[in-house]
Image 1 (cartoon, rainbow, N blue to C red):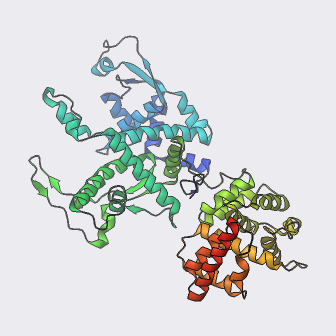
Image 2 (cartoon, helix red, strand yellow; image 1 turned 90 degrees about the vertical axis):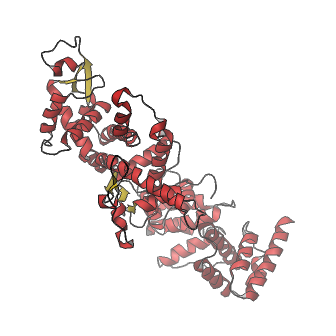
Amino acid sequence: MSADRPTLPPVRLHSEAELARDALNAPLMARAAQLARWAERGVPVGVGGEILEESLGAATEHLGLAADEDGPGLTAEAWQLAVDTGLVEVEETEETGEGDDAEDSAAVGLAKPGEELTQLTGGSPQDVLDIWLGGMETVLADAVAPDLADLADQLADGGELDLDALDWNPEEEAELLDGILGNLYLLTALGDAPGQSVPLPALAASMIVPDDMEEPTDDILEEVSEAMMRLDDQFRVLEPIGLVAYQPVDEALIEELDDAGDTVRAAEPLTDEDVTRYGMVRLTPLGVYAVRARMQEAGVYAPAVGDLRDAAAGTLLDALPDYPEDLAREESEQWLAPRTPLDAARELLVAARGDDEGAPLRRLAAQQTLALVGADAEPALREVLDDRQLGGLARVWLAERGFADIPEPSQDMIFWLTVDTIAAQLGTAEEDTDELRDLIVGLTGQHSGFFDAVWQVDHPATPDVLEAMGRLHPDRKAAKEARTAAFKARSRAED
């Protein structure tokens, strides 16, 4: 793949309106917005904007979570998100410590709805997504933070904070999670079923097991197991913001130890059929949008279908060979939509010309895109019938639509088109494929004396095409003829 090709496959994105609706409906964001509206009368807060205990009870009640044992924790998380995203703003109080009760005396500020709440409820879809992205970054940071219980244990009885003792490296944790989200993004882009979940063991192994390792060692398997448990915790944090859809690890499969390290409950044995019990995860459409946005901010080219709608024809044709077939068709349809068939055909044909290395692939992409163009494009195709580079694909287009008066191509054009067609296929496929062999056998079988004629074709890819035919042709005699012809062609090109 050349350096200017996409580094990631394209993805389908939902519309901004759909994504904004998903963002507003994400449980954590929805609760944060509810609390921001609830704060209209002012809510006393602590040093970091944290909601104080007495207000926390009222806030939990407001969210309808009072009967949930996790309700206060969920409410505190939602409140913190509201603070972090500007849905609520904190004004410092002029006097502190003089209130009538503990709640007032602990308060150092008063929180009220912020400007961002107006944008969230009345702004554009992009405004909503910008606020959500900011909140998502906060949640990502929380997901890789050390366990609060471990921190509390260290600080108990006057102890000091020791991050080394926690076995926690913030850079490594963030890098692992970024890599995992990147792999999920790739699986979404490349998968036949974008909504399909991935087993957590396979996802953890994708980051840890070396590609060249046939059988993981016990140490590697232990590392994968540890990574799974970290990811289980992290995905539980990320799901409420709408980034992933996650089925957690079945707790019955996790060994429970007491403070002394003795087993309190043994883990249930796992059979092959039970793999889903170890956790299943996928990026949501909102998650795909978010991971792509983060990659773009990091300078990674991460295309989405529709990006090329306003691009020049040459840009479109250079990109399409790297797209899966269905996405290439969608991209082409979106590019064609604002153009008339005649104008689109002329643009594509001009862009398809060339003798550079990528030209055969451009012509193949042009042929596939032109297949979507209506009959009104006929004049553009007739204009290039005498063009050696374009005359062949023009004849195919006209014949497929049943037009009459299509002149027969010259032998020179036929052989040039043959070389160009194989050169394009060599650029799109792995060499050792049955489809490519069938194409070679079919083309060579249509003409007697094929190799004697083809080595003389004035196409820059002629030597490479003949060498490939020599490697791939299943008939030994024909393969030898191809190799001899390739030698002649290369000698001719060097003269």
